[in-house]
Amino acid sequence: MKLKNKVAIITGATSGIGKATALRFADEGADLVITGRRISLGKDVEAECRQRGVRCVFVEADHSKEEDCLRVVETALTEFDHIDILFNNAGIVTKGTAETTSEEVWQNTLDINVTAVWRMCKLVIPHMKKQGKGAIVNNGSDWSVVAGKDAFPYVMSKGAVGMMTKAMALDFARDGIRVNAVCPGDTFVDRWMEKGYFEGSSPVTLEAAIKEASEYIPMGRFGKPEEIANAVLFLASDEASFVTGHLLLADGGNTAQ
Ligand SMILES: NC(=O)c1ccc[n+]([C@@H]2O[C@H](COP(=O)([O-])OP(=O)(O)OC[C@H]3O[C@@H](n4cnc5c(N)ncnc54)[C@H](OP(=O)(O)O)[C@@H]3O)[C@@H](O)[C@H]2O)c1
Image (cartoon, rainbow, N blue to C red):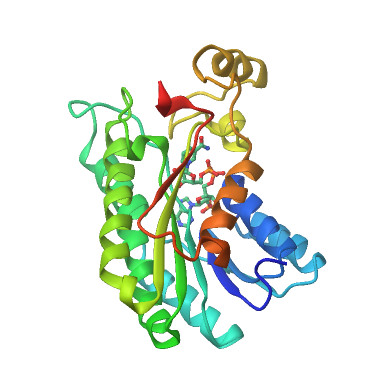
């Protein structure tokens, strides 16, 4: 019960890494506010968390909208009185080069992957400051530290998440607020089979994904959402009490090569 008596907000917990983290946090005793736009999936995750014996509230929210971010934080404070942990997980994966990226894709990627992360931090930091304690974990990517081809807007956004994490860690270290990022390598999520790796690309089959991973990832396989959740749990818990400004790579060795 590493998170007993803690309250956590997890953005984008309707599927993938966010959902796996919500379930893991619930297993560790945290009360939760979880968000996303897909109401039915969000309600399902809310029910699964409650079955684990914690309090959990799903808030339908589009984090590209300021008013929705505010409503999420207000809900956490109304329901639970305080906020110990913020996991900024909601994100989209966009494709293109500097030449082919449209203004719309650039703006969308910035809105959800960068601005929403800053905005959620800005909203919770005053409360964490008053408590003298808090842990923020941002979801970056292995592309927060190295670039990849034909993913220009996404790489730009995740690079920004890495530096936002470090800058905020410095600014709030004396307030007892730790700010870290988890940086997953390719992690197999349902979205890949529904929509493909990127917004607007083709769905991927499990067989093709397994083959691809075996070729380029040192460990020979993609990550699992539960494995990323374990890394988030460490950064969010008191076990990481002297860790701040850190980008924790969980990528099967991908960036070591
Ligand atoms: N899977 C990987 O290989 C990998 C690798 C590195 C980093 N990541 C990062 O991990 C995070 C989670 O992605 P995932 O791989 O787990 O994929 P996913 O299953 O598609 O999860 C994305 C989550 O973000 C939410 N979201 C997206 N746009 C949103 C918006 N405007 N407002 C509110 N919620 C929004 C989605 O919820 P709704 O659709 O319900 O709104 C969903 O819950 C992302 O930040 C991604 O960049 C993933």
